[in-house]
Figure 1 (cartoon, rainbow, N blue to C red):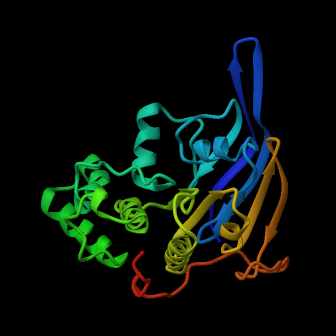
Figure 2 (cartoon, rainbow, N blue to C red):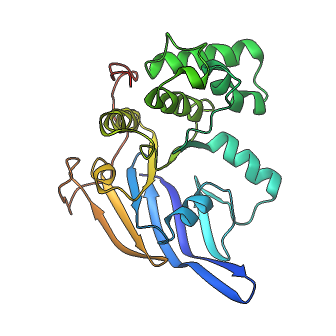
Length: 254
């Protein structure tokens, strides 16, 4: 299976004046195309820093990060912005929707930045909102949507440019337990359709819904384990692979 992410001895040091904070201390791992992986650790472990680097939002102090075959530590800032827009779909804990825009207009934003024409981006945005179960909420603004519906809009937006990977930062952190489970079901369905999904979380319940958990503590990987999909260990399990699931439908609206 092709490698989607590769980190090679990645470090990140923040200069806080008289003090240097070593957020990452030499992290190495690979994530294959089609995997669904959780990066898990407590507050201060380095997982948020790692997410920033994987999302091309920051650069490592040393080491190499390769995304979909390209060394993203060596590219210019304008190319890095292009990679973020075209190859990575972001899903955030607080949704990050623009409050004055409707659901469909929020989903269209990445397509606007990519230069897609008005008619095509509207068609694509409506299609994605229908796929995540929000076909009847396309003209609602964020303040007219529940937390789960907002996260579905955010997931549709993340898919707008058909990214190579979905990178979700605590995607259930602002949701109740039932709604969070539905969002995880939606992400799992996307993974079955072939999307590479990486979830950064501190929640063991969220991590247990993936097929692999990379544990990080004190800026180092402490454990890398594979699961059987129900939270149990499956050391010999193969990485998640693209599936043959149908369109993203049938997930109850939150």
